[in-house]
Length: 317
Ligand code: DP6
Image (cartoon, rainbow, N blue to C red; front, side, top):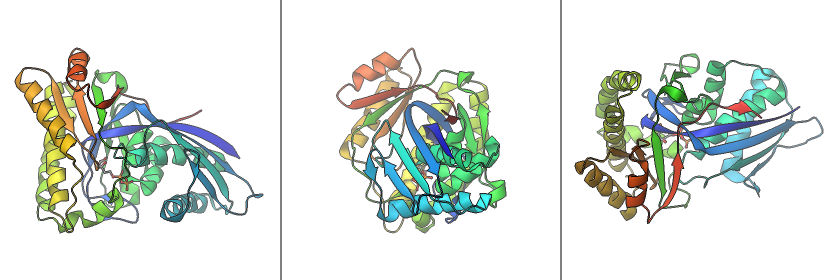
């Protein structure tokens, strides 16, 4: 009873920040992301009646404490669905720094959901798998699919699933990921989602996001890169405004984050197609097109950079 899966990370254009149900990771608003081919996790899961406890390794390190609890709870959810109480060995590797705001929980829980379900014999379709992955991490639901993906907020577990809006071949977007910090963030997204509603701006952002969602869907269908970029920047700024005004305030940016954001705006003033977005961390994603990629990369070459295109969905490998 062993299986291995590979899942790519994703970057949200319209982000998820704040939970309606923190236990099941039901978000307050729907979100739309791009799956990233160059950031991925490969996870192997083995269930056996010979194992007397769950053992979890990530990037060669034996996981304990709260991180272990989160993964064991997730395995329990899958074991309950199958009705089998059987322990597991999980071995997971990321090709990028974990917990540094590069969405390792997205690729991590998407790969774990796929490998664990396959290994235990729970054969589900993509929509069901996205719901299961969401229980591990909200953004993981979107990493089940490739291309442009929406996570529908929904009211309950059944109504909250991801689906593919458009395949990777829809258009060529490049994401230049600038790693300005490899440190694990001091406040987890889980905690951030919990306190989002303490910000007076949270409700306002949710209202604006409701009108941005149809705009973004149609921009993707029209292959309108500028509109996609504008929405990405706008929602990143709105989400970070919510973060900064919650209690306690969350400030994920560093000086370099701001420096890069300014450079991107400057480039745009010169006619270069580039837009930024920032998740719950200091690292910056710069979205551009293949024809501007080398120029944007050159202007930002003093930072450590990963260049990614649009990736595919999770697969058993
Ligand atoms: C800012 O669902 O990834 O990246 O699993 O606790 O890390 P954790 O939360 P997660 O939250 C995503 C927050 C975000 C925005 C987004 O990806 O939509």
